Amino acid sequence: MADLRVDICGLAFPNPVLPAAGPPGRDGRALLACAEGGAGGLVAKTISTRPAQVPTPNMAEIPHGFLNCELWSELPPEQWLEHEYALARTAGLPLIVSLGYTAQDIAELAPRVRPFADALELSTHYIGEDAQPMVEAIRAAKAAVDVPVFVKLSPLGREMRRAARLAQQAGADGIAAINSFGPCMAIDIETGLPLMGSHEGHGWLSGPALKPLAVRCIYEIAQEVDLPILGVGGVSRGEDAIEMVMAGAWAVQVCTAAILRGPQVYGRIASEIGRWLDEHGYASLADIRGLAHRQAAARPFRTQAVPPRLDVGRCTGCRLCEQSCPLGAIRVVDRTARLNLTLCSGCGLCVTRCRPRALLAC
Ligand SMILES: Cc1cc2nc3c(=O)[nH]c(=O)nc-3n(C[C@H](O)[C@H](O)[C@H](O)COP(=O)(O)O)c2cc1C
Image (tube, rainbow, N blue to C red; front, side):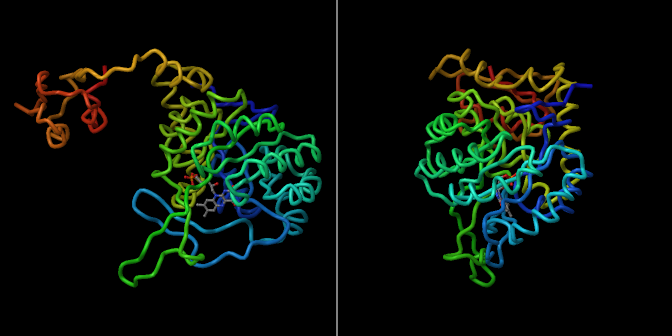
């Protein structure tokens, strides 16, 4: 069985699947449920110097994703300090305490949470696109505590590389990427009401729809800085985590999938990662970390058509490839796909639609 343990800044995680800050870590009891569900470490809901006034409704499942406008913890910091963190620590897993938002907030909170925190994670979600407040928040945390400080980046623009570089220069020990994306909006067409009860009906997108954005951000951060990355955004299966690790993540965090499927999802994803590594002959996640960078570097940019390779033995004749080939270059004859190499433009769509993986990119 592959080794799932991961060491990040001296924190020993038995497996790389953690909750992301949010409802799965809304209080001490919820964090214990994550541990029982198989999480490799714990991340508590973001707290700030005052409790959040959270609008309702504030969560909605939408096709391929999820919207929320939940802000930070509605619990006062005193309750976390007197009760919730100590309860979470009884799980015996590394506990990452999430704090927001300004340098002043962090300077006030960091020393108070330090007795419970194995590391801090700073949310930058409500301090705008300008990097300076993030830099000041990191400096305030580093001045206040001696535990690792991770900064969590929000996908506000295309400036992931710059944000990561500035975070490293300010002293961050690691990066969590990414927070939810937005503002977005969805409307219940039976009532005409926006699904979110926030100002202007704005909500923030998470879940499967977010994953390609998260993977791109992780990939760019890994190119820019030499810091451990906690990948977050749309992970709901072991394969999602594998993809993030190939982009450069050291571990993953999961929020939406745990909201929808319960905290057992952590152990399930960890088992799926282990099974995938075993089946593909890897001994640990370190063997595949950053693999996409090496593979992409080895593939030359090309514009000529390179048709996929067809493994006839795997083809089930399901016709998914035939239905969606824009050029009619695939026909299923006698329950087997046949490629017309003259018509194929090498667009690659059929490779991604082929469920039994009979079509492979060259
Ligand atoms: C209901 C909800 C509440 C969240 N609250 C927080 C929070 O307090 N702090 C934070 O940094 N991120 C928060 N997030 C963002 C998640 O931690 C995570 O970055 C995002 O949802 C993408 O991951 P996912 O697709 O696994 O949910 C929240 C997300 C949701 C859905």
